Amino acid sequence: MNKDELLKRALQFDFLSIEEGCFLFAHAATSELMYVGNELRKKQKPDNKVTWIIDRNVNTTNVCIANCKFCNFYRIPGHAEAYITTIEQYKEKIEETFRYGGNQLLLQGGHHPDLGLSYYTQLFRELKSLYPNLKLHSLGPPEVAHIAKLEKMTHTQVLTALKEAGLDSLPGPGAEILNDRVRRMISKGKCGGREWLDVMRAAHQLHLTTSATMMLGHIETIYERFEHLVWLREVQSEKPKDAQGFIAFIPWPFQDENTILRKVKGIRNSVTGDEYIRMIALSRIMLPNIKNIQASWLTVGKAVAQVCLHAGANDFGSIMIEENVVSAAGAPHRFTSDGIQDAIREAGFEPQLRDQQYTHLPLPAHLEQQLIAY
Ligand code: SF4
Image (tube, rainbow, N blue to C red; front, side):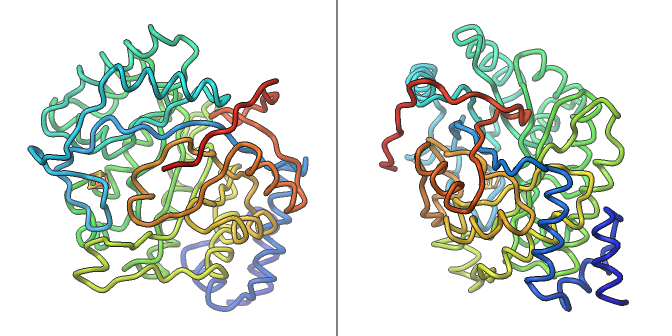
């Protein structure tokens, strides 16, 4: 393989193979990958804007029977700290989100053994009837797969019912690394990689916009990272022409603090700032059919995320008024609305507020800044 030839092909939006991605990871300099990633971003997103969103990650329940080895968030059924969020608590969180200029909940939770489809459809209907303008970017493939198993239904049936009840878009948590060798070791209680992709295929057929993710830097091989990217690209190629499919890809490094993976197996996050920037550039290179690449400031911090904006990333994601899952494993970084916009400007770009469909929005006239206290 020839590095320069591969970089030239990448600049033409060629679909590089798993092996070719691995070759670039091993042999291309960070500056070369950044150059190509940035050129591709400029072609796909020529306006020098970096998008961001105001929303809130709220958890339906922390009860989970999946036992993922990297997760400090969940509690087993019957645990003293187990909870299911009440309508009163949702109301408080939603009204606060509106005051901060947001109108979306990223609703996620554990695999609760007793919460089936009707629990979620009733919840979505109630939230939408209380707040008709609220957007629900909610659940994810592992939860959809869990509900489908509980109810003995297909993914399409579950997603159709959720969509009718008010689901606006489907986030992409639980992808981790899609290869089942990895999943058997770190998250064998949740859906396998094939099922994760199948849920997304079904969502795309229903014209539900989704996003894709990757959690890297634990026990995966470099080959498995690129295989993950190629599998996402293949599913994106199958979406109906008039559907968005995966509207964004968001990679982030494994957060290891107090996790079983670290305490029992001694596995720590192995991703340096330089490697994360390289993976952002290679994500842009490997995923020509996914338009938005998001830098995870929550996990890598402001400075590394800013460099990512020069390596192919065009989106800074959410200010996350609340986030409890990744933060429980050590992700320490926080932004207000002013802070995220200043960080984007400092990096040389124009901040642009967006919604979950990546439609540009005007800034609300009076934007109350969130209190960073969690
Ligand atoms: S990551 Fe999700 S599925 Fe896994 S244990 Fe935590 S809450 Fe459960």
